Amino acid sequence: MHLLYVDESGGDDPNAKDNYFVLGGISLFERKPYYLSADVDAIQKKYFPAVTDPIEFHASAISNGNGSPWDSMPRTQRKELLREIYGLLGRQVGNSGVSLFAIALYKPDNRSSHIQRTCEEMAGHFDAYLGSLEAAGDKQRGLMIFDQSRHEKTVQALMTQFRTTGASFGRVKRLAEVPLFTDSKITRMLQLADFVAYAVYRRYESGDASYFDMILPAFHEGSGVVHGLVHLHADHKTCYCPGCLSRRTTAAGA
Image (cartoon, rainbow, N blue to C red; front, side):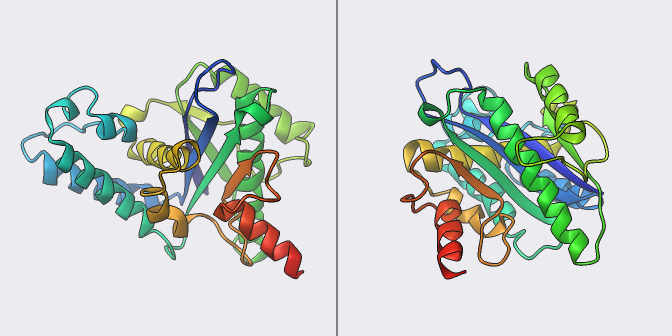
């Protein structure tokens, strides 16, 4: 089974000041989370050798020095820690059973429910990813795991709909069960999903690709298309982000 851990970045409130809402995710074969969690634990031990309990890693909190222990950590050290986490994610390229996903929604062009639209895209692309594995002889089911949020009932209902009556693209066929929701404090994988969402949000909202570029090679890719990265906006035909450009270039050469 493949597990897709999903977290969000940016406000989904239509009245929020930011322009983007992002869902980010990391998909792993069921045996992978144990080893990747150990890698994150080793990073914590490097920076906090005296702390035995797990520290929750949130990209924005680390970046901005918000809350303990980040408010007492020098900015240079916080940036170093962030780069270590993003370096770990970037090194997953070519690691069989690990892929990144993200849906970046430009809110001014999408007035309907942001969580509905991004969840639909995420479920569809995860299902297609599982389909590509199946076509290669590796038949797998998937399970989506979200951080606890006020969207829980909405997402559960949406995923039930996608698996039964279908989404706009058709029925999601390869998910084993409706999504699970858990506390990011107790799973490193949701914390890594948060890092994916934050890097993508910074890339589209602020034009800061410093962390995004480190993890771009680890996004699900096939036949020259970065399938794992979806940019939802009206000007996709002129956009030069990796997601839009790879689709446009491949279509032109078909």
